[in-house]
Image 1: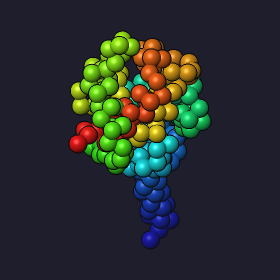
Image 2: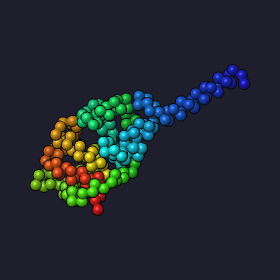
Image 3: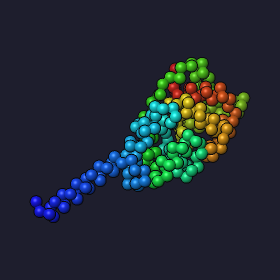
Image 4: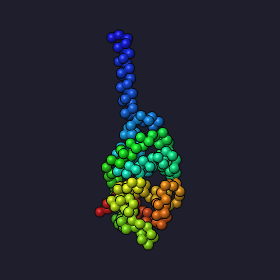
Length: 214
């Protein structure tokens, strides 16, 4: 084997290694890394490979509307979401994502199958939450949750999927909307959450975790 042949073989081997590395890359600063690779190699650490996060500290992304996911990723990238549990992780992680990668991540999680994280356990609380979800609280001028988020809690456009979300995570976000301005795009939810008692929020969150309730 002559020098030219050896050089060619080494060059081809290098190209092969580069492709393999790219397909397994965790480099959030590389615009060439495919969105599904980032989902598997980076996002899965918190959100699970299929978007059904096991820890209630992190939202379950499986089955979320693409438009909602894309909007939230861009909000993190632009530092427009200020809730601590979000920006502490997502500002840095989203900083170098391209629009193509953001769109790809949104499409990836939107096509995943959402599954229940488990039964909340308090049947009376869940029944109360179901009533709020389906009927709202007319005496407080609070509409049914399903009117924006879908009658099956599946989400709709800019409105997130709520069905099968962690109870603790939902409660945390409702408190963010009620007590702070950390999610400025959520003006509608701030108004709605302001009229909810803590008991109301706990009930609807418990219901949504095991949606649909038996």
